[in-house]
Amino acid sequence: MESGLAILRERNTGLSKCGKTFGELVDKFMFFGDEVGLQASDTGDVTIVGDRSQVKHEKRNADSRVSVTTFRVGNADGDEGPAIFMPPGARRDPILTDEKEADVSGLFNLGPAALLKLREKSGDVTKITKKEMCAIASRYFSIALEEKNKKELLVAALQAQISARPGVLPACVLDAAAIAAAAVVAATATAAAAADSDSEGED
Figure 1 (tube, rainbow, N blue to C red):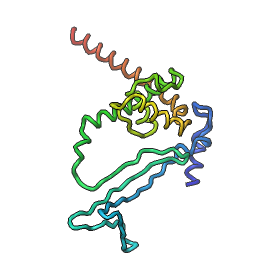
Figure 2: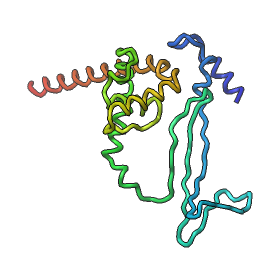
Figure 3: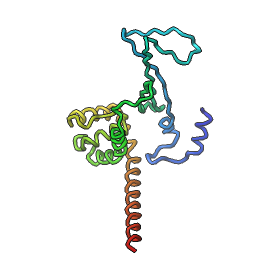
Figure 4: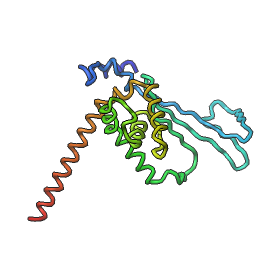
C-alpha cells in the first residue's frame, strides 16, 4: 500500500484547485468498504454456533432464512459514503420503480447547480427550494430527504448535516462550478448540432 501511495505522490505533483498538494488530500482518495450481515429473529435473539471456516451462516426457522447484508463505504479522511442494503431474493421491491430511480438520479445530477445557488445565497438554506435541498443532501451527504415534507423540516435536516460536517460543501464548490460549466458547454453543443441538422434538412 505504501508503495502505491508513493507512486501516486510522484505522479500527482503541483497544487490542486484548492491550493493543496496531493499529499495533503490523499486521505480523501483512499476508500474502504465494510460488509456486515444482519439477521432477524422473532424472539429478539440470534445465536449462531458454526465452523470458523464457514463463509456464511443463516438462521433457519421453518421455511424462513432471513438475512440482510449491508455494505458501508467511506474514505480515510472520515467522510462517509452510501450505506447499501442487500436483502436476499431475486424480486425488486415495488417501491423501487423506474420512475423513483429516475427521480433519485435527477436529484443527484441537480446537486452541483443547487450547491452553487446555495453559495450565491451566502449559505442560507432557507433561500433555496425544497428540491434543491434534497439534491444537496443526496449528492453531498448521501442522505435521502423527502421533498413532500414541510420546508422547515428539510431546512433543519440539511442544516444539521452541514453543521456536523462543515468542510464538505466548501470542498465541493470548485467541482460543482466545473460540472455546471461543462453542462452549459454540452447543452450549447447539442443545440448547435440540432440547428445544423435542421438547416441541412431545409436544404
